[in-house]
Amino acid sequence: MFMRTWVKGLIVFVVISSILIGCGKVENSTGEQPKEEPKPSYSGEMVKEAAIKNGENGSIEVQYTLKNDSGVEVQYEISSGLTVDYIVFDEHGEMISQLSREVMSTMAIQTLTLKQGEVFEEAFSIGGLPDGKYTIQLFLTSAQQEELVEKEFSISNSMYQRMTGKLIEMNGDVVTVEIGEEPVPFQLTDLAKDQLMTMEEDGFIEFIYVETEYEEKTIERIIFIEYRTHVHLDKSVLEVEQELGKVVEQIKANPNVLEGLKPFEIFTLYMYVLAGEDFETLYHFYLPDSMDIPVEEYVKQNRDGNVEAHRSFMRQFNEVRDFTVITKDQQGRVEFSLEGEQTDLAFQLRMQENTWYVMPTPLQ
Image 1 (cartoon, rainbow, N blue to C red):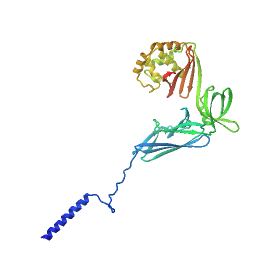
Image 2: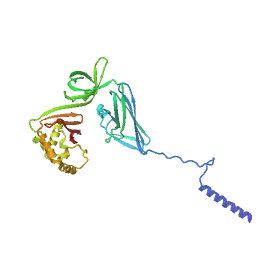
Image 3: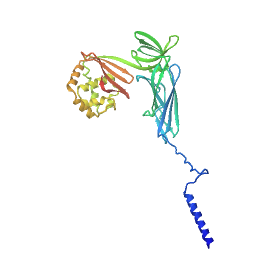
């Protein structure tokens, strides 16, 4: 009897012990608890970088890197055959070079897909830079110029120089530029020749060139082309021709009516509408998305402003007959002076999608 009871007690003890061990944590041979496998961690973003290495004679090597550390697969819709574009600016913010303007590429839309942890890289060689400080922006050629990286760098001991002059003659691969009052012949690279292909003579150009040991000068690239046109009128600029005046009647309903008009025509219409104090129509001349107030507030501010000062200015402006129109790349301005004033006024414009628009606070 005692033996049977003891055996039953032993069985119960073994069962309970097994349950307790099964519910507890299993220890390894050293008696320590096993370590859990670490879960992967992500920064939750795309990691982008640009490495720059200086070369010889005004050149750099650039490596653009984009790593997907977001934790998910990412796709970009690329709008051309170029996956990455770059722009080089000088220390004053003047654009020196842009890849997409200097090379031919297809317009086919493509998709760039990066899985988690995947890295995309692209390398560039950029040359023909004079001594100075620069900033380069690199970005994907998507509609929003995504994953932009900006880096500063310097160039020293370059063989290239920068010059401004008036283009007075073009003859095949050779141009003559007036530097000061001296005509100087320059050879053209294929890039510079393409940049000047549609240019008329008598325009001002700023360019980068190199001079050989035989004193031959070659223009590497054009930085900008500036046109200056003098306009003399026999009557007030506010006396608008009938055909041009029809644009004013249409602009509120169809802002695209400005497309194709020249900078001086936009200036003429703007001043005509300003003289008539039609501020609602005037609002539609400004560069899209450049105004930080709605049209109703713009109209109210102008009507509540100094009306007498405005009308006094317009009376003086009505007597102006001479204007200078200056265009440079996507920027334009119309310069003029009021009678009795020492300082010229400049009316600022900017081109966007083949249309010239007025800048906010245009008169400076």
